[in-house]
Image (cartoon, rainbow, N blue to C red; front, side, top):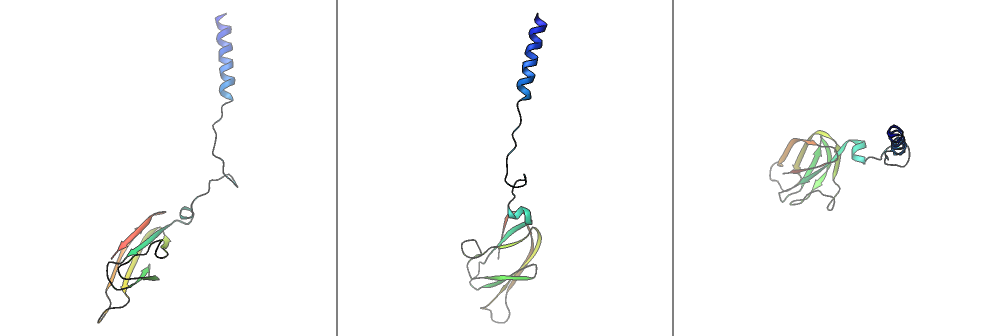
Length: 122
């Protein structure tokens, strides 16, 4: 008698647990989750902060990106940030005006991390 009861309980337990399924998050489209653009494109954002009173021309990987005014910075609220491929970059900031004989220039190498912001202060 105990065997029949135990067998019946075991059978009922198997039926109950076999009906449980782990839910997977649903996503639109082809069943894959949508990734942010910075993951898909492997990019990060570079900001420049100018501590000096004169404007500086900005370059990333020897490509001109724009000018930052004296005593200001590039940011989403003041101007467009510079999106670039994640990885190692070279940067240069060259004084645009206000010099007597030759412009001051600052340069260096930095690493842009995917989906992160990098602020370069000169």
